[in-house]
Length: 279
Image 1 (cartoon, rainbow, N blue to C red):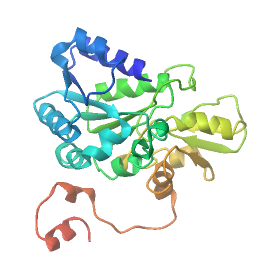
Image 2 (image 1 turned 135 degrees about the horizontal axis):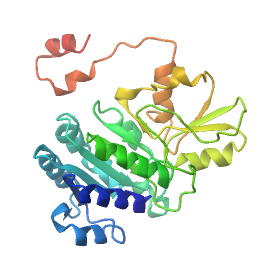
Image 3 (image 1 turned 45 degrees about the vertical axis):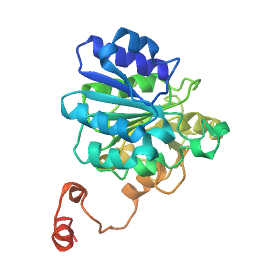
Image 4 (image 1 turned 135 degrees about the vertical axis):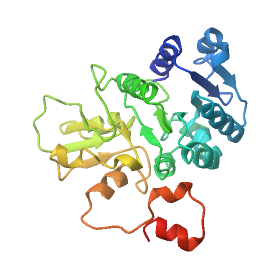
């Protein structure tokens, strides 16, 4: 997926978009051509993820759409506070790009697992999660993000993912994208990101969908329209706080009293904030 990512990023710069790519001293073998072609649109921030994210927020505040590139565990948990305070709460057009979500870098040790990243990012009220399953969805996600810059998290596979879609699909937040148009079975499986290939292996005869764009603001927008009340979700992430949890929260027959996300950008006494937050 890294090639279509770089292709679309390059096309965006050529078309005149104010795009900046910042890497945390990673991506070698992928980013060099872009850096050579557009030296004013590229920064290697070094192994300093917190500084890198703060830099991205500052540049976004000045009008850039900044893509921050690193391995999944480094671009999320290493700089979680900066993503939350600097990017999300200020609603800035920064796309946090993670490569190798799930267990893609498992051989490098559990420090490189990214099986809690959805849980972290989806608690941030302004973040859109973009989790493509293959190269065609990666292109679709990039085109959507470049057209509509916003706080976002792009979770790319490490490489070699099988083709799921024969063409670039039409996508929008919360939408279920049908994969197996020819299958008429009633059993439905829905996945996000590279877990689509896992779903295909585990459930070869099921009717399958992917959901490449989702997040707090888009809780299962297509759930009722899909017509599926009973289905299985598949993800390379822990169950708690993941994609399946997001779907369940939108479909559970219960009500929840909790804080409105607007308090994330407010200052006041505890009592004032509780009231503003709906409690």
